[in-house]
Length: 236
Picture 1 (spheres, rainbow, N blue to C red):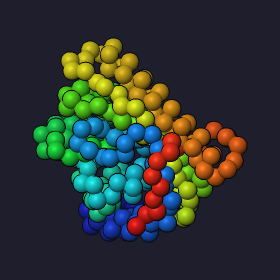
Picture 2: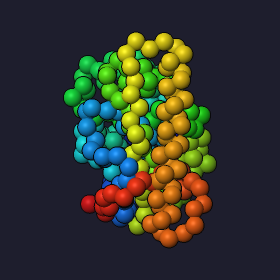
Picture 3: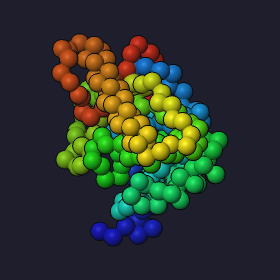
Picture 4: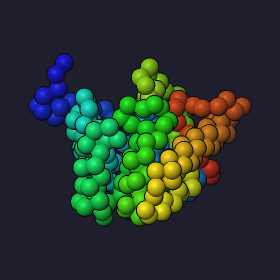
């Protein structure tokens, strides 16, 4: 079905409503570093778990980079209604323009990015986020999620839809500092380092979730990760 601007708006309204209805039932524990979402850093999370931060950080007025591909306009409409500022562009299309807008127009806002989007491979960090961090002077904070119950789709990113009333752990890992004036080899090395930190945050989230639900560790959970003693909240 062709996504016209009118259809995108209607799908955006419906999508935002469904995210709010589902998210308000989740029980979320925050672990790891301070979870304050501030303009000092870039929050990085895997494409497949974007539904969770979309609800968890709603009304933050954070700038989020949304792909110009296919259903990107629908996603942009959804996140706008959840209280974000969508910036259109990705590592594969419109990335330079989007990065410029983030730097010039959204410098006072928090930033959220899926560094393996919009087409993967899953978990593979594209170097654009490293370059953006270098130009902005912001560090990158990897966040992983672990979901007790949910549905994992058969998409390239193994997109995760947490079940109603599911327990979720959010683990914010240590920041990755990115220097100015990077060469190609440095960008590539930092991209691989961010991949490793995202995997570690997801593994930590999974272990924390195992402790919470009282089961033996079993690896990754629903495509998200889990933290260390901190806040617990129920959506509202």
